[in-house]
Image (cartoon, rainbow, N blue to C red; front, side, top):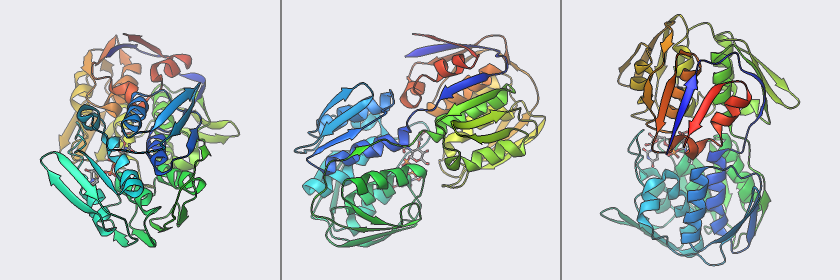
Amino acid sequence: MADYRIFHSPRLSGEVWIGTAKNAVLPIMAATLLTGEECVIHKMPALTDVKNMLRLLQLCGAGDRMEKDTAVICARNVQNPEDEGLLRSMRASVLVLGPLVARNGECAFSMPGGCAIGQRPIDLHLKGLQKLGAKVETDGGQIRVTGKLQGANIYLDFPSVGATENLVMAATMARGLTRIENAAKEPEITDLCHFLVAMGARIAGIGTNNLTVEGVEEMHGAVYTPIPDRIEAGTLACAAAMTEGSVLLQNARSDHMRALLFKLAESGVIFQEDPKGLRIRGRARRPMEVRTLSYPGFPTDMQAPLMAVTTQLNGLSVFVETIFENRFMHVVELNRLGANIRVEGQLAMVQGGKPLTGAQVTATDLRAAASLMIAGLATQGETVLHDGGGHLMRGYDGLEEKLRALGAQVHKEA
Ligand code: EPZ
């Protein structure tokens, strides 16, 4: 629903505020279904995915109101969401599954959609719920999960972020003790656990790969401010590194960004913690080798934005994408700008150093859109980023405005 016109930008400089993490606020919103009392979430980001999640919570029976950037959500009674379109359009819709089964003993909805970056199965979610005693029936694209949950020992074949979130939410009100081993431990999961504890949950091992949850009868309302968005901060850090800038990312949590920051530092970028956030200075110079991994490894969501930076580095940079099966769609579009990138399966080889030339490019997914916007900053001539699917606005709250505030030449055409 938008096009962006991007021109070669001077060195970015100045300060910009990092907003609340999309991937923290979405599971926290889903967790409000666990109680009939009012929950208050501050500093809500203005994202399409957040609007869609609010709509989904309404379909699940929750009432909500926004007071500036504060959401007040109250799910006095809960029900199954019906809206197929919404459920299919947003992967995070699967996160209402655990809370609804825990609260109501049942949840029936259509399989959440895959998306450009992969099929996005939910087998680990369903297997874990079955371990907790739920009955799972699938009929075509419909799923029905029913049962009174009992604590259990769960081992995740893969540290899935969404499965960990769904299962820890379900376990908060399962009878008895639940252990989740090989759980994901992204900062957004730690944040969700802190919110659940504020609601009265009993969780041990928060921030580790082994979570222990002692079920409680009831959860109560809570007031909470989620963590800042490490991927928005990382995206802006990449933009600064692309233009040899000097920027202050206010409110950024550098402790959530170590893998990216050390990768940028290896390449010549300087980062400094600052009482107000995180300072990024200088330019990436040396080619990189990046393997995406579960946290605390290099985040898959930063693979596309960082790849844009490596197109300007003399030499061969290599990316191995181990998390999603189809997350190199930005490569074709970067090559349209004159980059020289070859993909072999899960490997992308970037022969960098050649200047990029403006062209018309298309956003295929959220982080690909960010990657192309960053590439446009170092491109001779005008780049037009077509984002008919509204990908960028799903996960970034005014990225083009923040870049412009730092001196970039980026303009949004409705
Ligand atoms: C979350 O997605 C994030 N989304 C993604 O961010 C992020 O890229 C991903 O975690 C990895 O960090 C939200 O938090 C809303 P997974 P999620 O379950 O939960 C496979 C962005 O750009 N898998 O850890 O879907 C799956 O197919 C988005 O902000 C199964 O096979 O990630 C994928 O290959 C993109 N079976 C891998 O695991 C399952 O049951 C990682 O998936 C679940 C997952």
